[in-house]
Every structure is written in C-alpha cells, then in structure tokens.
Length: 171
Image 1: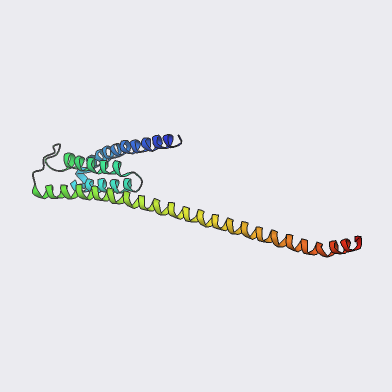
Image 2 (image 1 turned 30 degrees about the horizontal axis):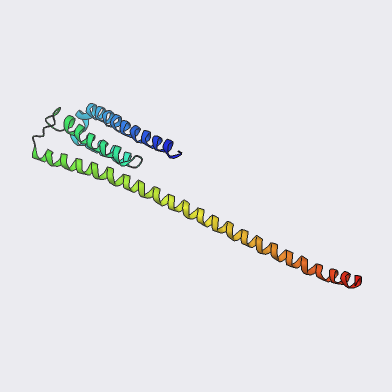
C-alpha cells in the first residue's frame, strides 16, 4: 500500500519533467530566435545542447531524450535554412543536424546514466554506513553483556566468602 503513493508521486515527477522539457525548449527557441541576427545558427544549437546536458543531470532519461529530440526538430525548423520547414538543402547542414541529434541524444542518455550511477553509489554508501553502525551497536551490546557477566561473577565471588562464613557459623 505504501508503494502506490510513491509510484504515483514518481509518475507525477516524470510527467512534470516532460512538461518542463517542452517549456524549456520552447523558451530557448524563442530567445534564440530573437538573438538569431546577432548570434547565428549554431549558437542556438549550443544552447539547446547545454539545456539537454543540464536536464540530464537532474531528470529521468525519458524526459531528457524527448527534450533532445524536440530540440533537434526545433533547431532544424527554426534555424537551419530554409527556415520554418523541416527540409534541409545544404548537405553540410544535413550532416550537422544529424551530428546535433546524435550528440543531444547521447549527452542526454550519458548524463542520466551518470546521475543514476552516482545515486546508486550514494545508496551503497548509506547502506554500508548503516551496516557499520549496526555492527558497532552489536559489538557494544556484546561488550556490555561481557561487562555485566564480569560484574556479576565478581560480586558473586565477593559474596561467597561471607556466605561461607555465615553458613559455617550456622552449622
């Protein structure tokens, strides 16, 4: 029963990331479109790649890959001549578009894998610390038990002599 709210929360988080990815691409495309006369076509490609890499450091793989794909399509549609079409005339631009698409997908995939690996290492580190703490508690409990037995043995030994004297006197 506890897993259902967690799963629903995780699903909502991923859906939010998909939404934010689209919003970010749209916002960056709008900003780069306005800067196009000053920056040129390839500036927007670098901005899109940077956004994909940054998203990959924080988000799940699916939203990042969608963001990479939408960025590539937006870059083609808005910035590669002829603009406002998905057609590319220049063979050099075709190669650059394909490279952009591959790099965006690869960077998105690799950064999400790296983040997942870091999270797994952190989890293993916490588990190891928990095991060491449990081992330390067990050692402390064993030491306390040993001291308790030693104290009882010492007290019983100290009481044997007076009890023996009392028993002899009574006999």
